[in-house]
Image (cartoon, rainbow, N blue to C red):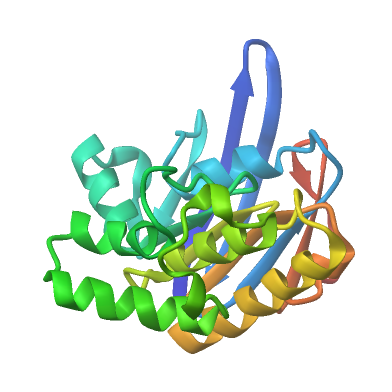
Length: 222
């Protein structure tokens, strides 16, 4: 089943086209890597797929719904309920513990406190941080912070997980563990994954690799 589709998408900044006539389809549960050098348009595409930006040409559909036609309130609802994001720089809230960071998406959805806590504790155990649930972000290593970020992104059981260079600020060992977690947890939770990366090792956890250059998808086998 098609979950996400970009059709003829283009985006420019000033007079420079960053993306041109780009088409991409992601199936439910599929893991897709967007691979290419810095500046090729990967993050711009990810922002369009997540409804954080709007294309100037073409359209992006999530479950058949055109994101550029959605109201800001509807986009916010989709991001709370169906889209999870893992950023390169973690973006944990420093005044919340690891568990509270993971609970936050569920609290925003109005879930009961006991349900949010149980879900957070389950996910922290899944990422190997059961004993660090009460730690503040400043007390966590980079790898631990990214694992908390993965748990938080999965808290609301999203249909689609978007990851922007999720291992870019980690050492190789921590990065490998985060990649394994992304693959395992996305499979267990039934979430599709679209991951921006310039790393062949990161791309290897995905079912399909989409190679980009100069704002376009390169032809050839995935």
